[in-house]
Length: 70
Image 1 (tube, helix red, strand yellow):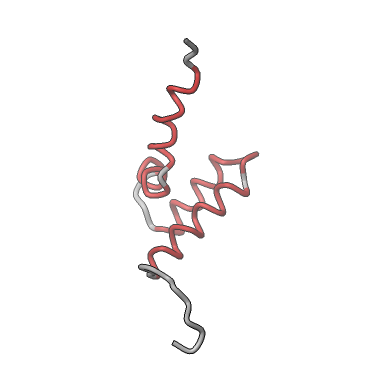
Image 2 (cartoon, rainbow, N blue to C red):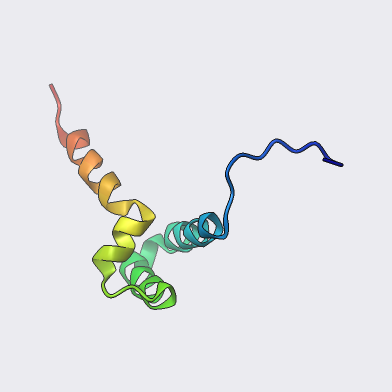
């Protein structure tokens, strides 16, 4: 109330996910290695789960359409 900040839903989970996405984005040269490290940090059982958690799988699917030209 003191600062009148208008912040919507916010949770520790949001910070965790944002952290993972930043680590991935900052390591574009070695993104697969970053995914393996994040998988271990997040205690996921596979890299594919980490990719889905970070929203990377959805991006990959959407980028499929970018290669099409009409």
